[in-house]
Image 1 (cartoon, rainbow, N blue to C red):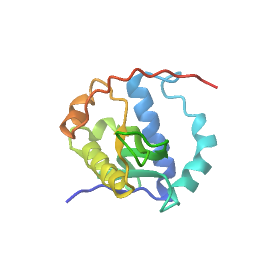
Image 2 (image 1 turned 90 degrees about the vertical axis):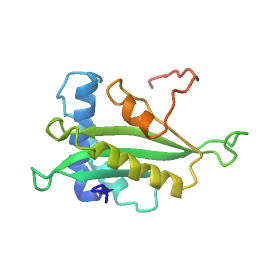
Image 3 (image 1 turned 30 degrees about the vertical axis):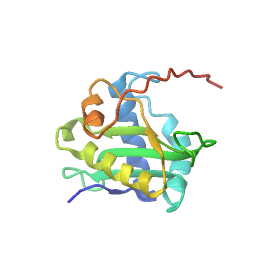
Length: 158
């Protein structure tokens, strides 16, 4: 039995905290520990977590040590892209946030959250799922069936 559950609007603050844990562990997006962005993000995250049938979902595991806190998170979206021969429906899942509190790691919590997110993607007819894996997380994703994508990716910040 999985300990993972669908996140609710009441989890929004903790979802953002765990997203910061992910940023800090990757050493990306500015100064480690900078949390000023969370206040601006909180209302939208709260709203999106309330949408039961929307294109966004987060799955979490409650912290056994901190009542009201979360130990792990996996969040993603379903996007529509014009169909292709490999994916005629054009529904693509993107996992964009997976994090576990440092004191809760190595217990399988992130795996439980990602597995529930994959069930959610399948229920929405998603043809494939994309994610960016850190070297530490790559074994988890490979165990779940993910493979390296040969397509190069580029980014433009607006």
